[in-house]
Amino acid sequence: MKAIVYNQYGTPGVLEEQELEIPALPPDRVLVQVHAAGVNPKDCLVRKGKFRLFTKKDFPKQAGYDFSGRVVEAGLRVDSVKPGDIVYGMLNGWKGASYAEYLVARPGELSPMPDNLTFSQAAAVPLAAQTALQALRDIGKIQGSHHVCINGASGGVGTCAVQVAKAFGARVTGICSSANTELVTRLGADHTLDYHSRNILEQDRKFDIFFDVFGNFTFKAVKQVLKPKGIYISTIPSPARFLKDLWHRIYPSGKKERLVVVKSRKQDLLFLKDLIEKGKLTPVVDKTFPIARAREAHTYVETKRARGKIVLSIMGS
Image (tube, rainbow, N blue to C red; front, top):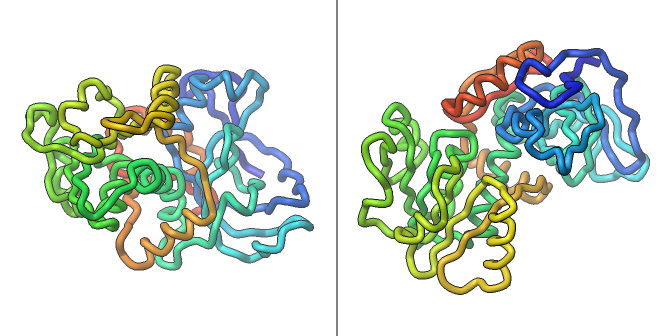
C-alpha cells in the first residue's frame, strides 16, 4: 500500500511516499481502506519532533491521524463495526498512520460517517471538531447564555468552534483577519474582530469562555476580558500549561486556565454527525492535495493561513 513515512524529524522535506505492507489486524480492531486524511498542525509538530518525549526516536514513522474511509475487515472480537461500513475518525495517541491506503483503528476511535459529506469533507472533521466540542462543552460547560470569544476563528478548529458554540446557543465573537471576516460571519459569529486593526483586550466585552485556538494570548493577558467565573482554554500544550490546568482542575473557583487535549470518542463523533446532518456544522475545506503532495500540504499548514482544513486525497475522493 502507499503510505507517507519519515525517517527523521525535520521539515516537510522528510516526508516520503513508500510502499508498505497492509497492516496486520489484531482481534480487537478494524482495518479501514482510507479514502481521505485530514492534515493538522499536530501532524506537523509531531513530524518536527516537538513531542519526541512521547513519539521517541524509532523510525520509520507514519504520518497522520484524521481519516475517512470504508471498513474492509473487522477483528474477531469486534461486533460493533462490520465490513462495508463507511466511517470517519481519528487515531488516538502519537502513532500516526492515516496518510496511507489502509490503517488499523480501534472501534471506539471511529463512527459512521455523516451521510451528507464527501470523504474529503468528513476527513476534515474528527480532530478539529472534537477539539472544539471537548473544549467548549466538556471544559467550558458552554450554555446558551454564554458569550464566547474564539481566537483563530477561521482555521480548522476555529471554524468548527464557531459553529459548535452557535449550536449550543451561545453568542460568539470571532477573531480573524479582515480577509476572513465574511467566512466567520457566515458560519454564525455574532461579532468579528480583525486582529490587525483592533485588540480584543482593549474592548469592553467580557467573556464566559475565551478559546485561544491560535495560541498567541496568555491567561494572564486574557483575565481582564473574562467574567468573574470565566475560563481561558488553550490548544497549545506546554509543561507550565499542564501544571496550571491541573491546578485549576483541583481548585476550580474564579477565573481559570485550562488546556484541551483532544481524544477521539465514538459518542462525540456521533454527536458531531448529528450536528452535520442537521446543517448546524459544515466542515470548511481550504485545499485538497493528493497523497503524493503531502510535503506541500504540510508546508501550507505551516503558513497558518489556511481557511478551515487541509485534506489529503488517498483514493481520489
